[in-house]
Length: 112
Length: 112
Image (cartoon, rainbow over all chains, first blue to last red):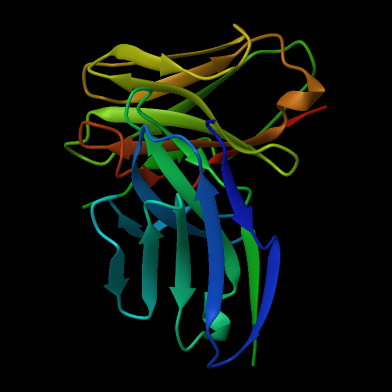
């Protein structure tokens, strides 16, 4: 119950297109859902995050959609750019254990 | 504000040795978490410290330990290194509760 399932494993999108990455969880003790972007050789960088009392959050080209009843959340990257090519991780914060549980990552490649 | 810093950035050790990694959190942050990142297991939670106390520990053997100092800086130690300990070790800091976590660049440990 402490897993976060992420799909797809890899994604190729054309420049200007929409990238969509999905995550699902089961544990209702998760209280915060961040997305991280990681470039090779770097640590994960916090991109955007949402709490379960909100259904959508938008920051620039990045949007999180959150479906509490389905226990699913997704990241949408609008107008994808080659510079967005990176690995994206969804995560869920366990309020009891004060830890982040990460999805397995999605390697995004935006072709020029 | 300076980000999370980790030292050293790279380490090469041999089996059986021990290693100490250091993390300096963002100024004012009191919670420090450690994660192990490997291609096979992804990002796994090691432990979390707040006000010099370990609040939670992940599912790792006792060879993995850590501590936090009064200035919130943290160290983690791995004793009797095994080949499987080769990984990127990431430190993340947050203000208090551990949900909004900011990662450092990591320490790349290679065990030969």
